[in-house]
Length: 354
Image 1 (cartoon, rainbow, N blue to C red):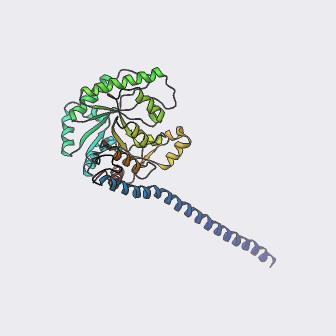
Image 2: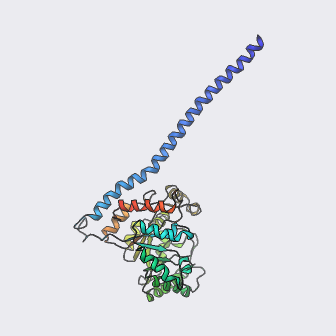
Image 3: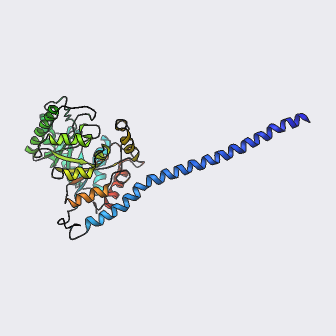
């Protein structure tokens, strides 16, 4: 009997422990679910706020007969294109079809397209674009490095890009600088960089094209100060600005201020959004943010204030091309085509697409 009683005590103790554990697990599970719910709500808030503000901007853009504040006639709705950078190289043809099917008017292509469609194949690509009713709006000059510390003459290679885009009937050539944001460049190095860019801009004009400088996260132009140094070193007649609102935001600049300051040099814009977690990391440690795998996301799902940007473009009567250029992002289950549909819906909410 004593043996039975001695065994019963541990059994009762185990039962009690099990009940306490179950209660604690229930509490933890409840806390985890609450945390998940809060996280979902935080993630949804930027989207809800975007939709609310975008509707106001869309109505204002389409309103007639004039602009608020009597600033002149309403700006024409800008043409909107899409960049093929969202798709892997082997899906280039699919990318063009998707962009066309979604109703975008133009396309920006990467530099490798010149290598793949040079010579006799240029007319083949031109015919394909015409069939899809896509204007070859811009070409990235991917091989132009323009490192301020190691400059070399890249004019010959650049002319290959220019000749190719002219053959397609395109408009704009894009370059970035090859500098690093943490490196200190001398006045002479920046001056030489500006001269090199001017030379490329002059070459572009010989082909009836415009050269645009794209300040990029992870380069000299990452910060507002770096962007200013580059543009101040160049001639506005030859070097224009491609304002990528996401890269500007991630680098700590205000896209609206940049657009207002350089609106006379603006040649077109890149639209995409910045992930909230990466934006917060960049505010704390920009170097760590540069090494994250994914920086960007679809329009309206991050921290970029698109309604304010679009409102500024409208007030300035800017109707330059807007190119959705979604790179450095985590593709959704439906791949780049799904992201393109999400971006199209966001642009419709902003009044940029009918």
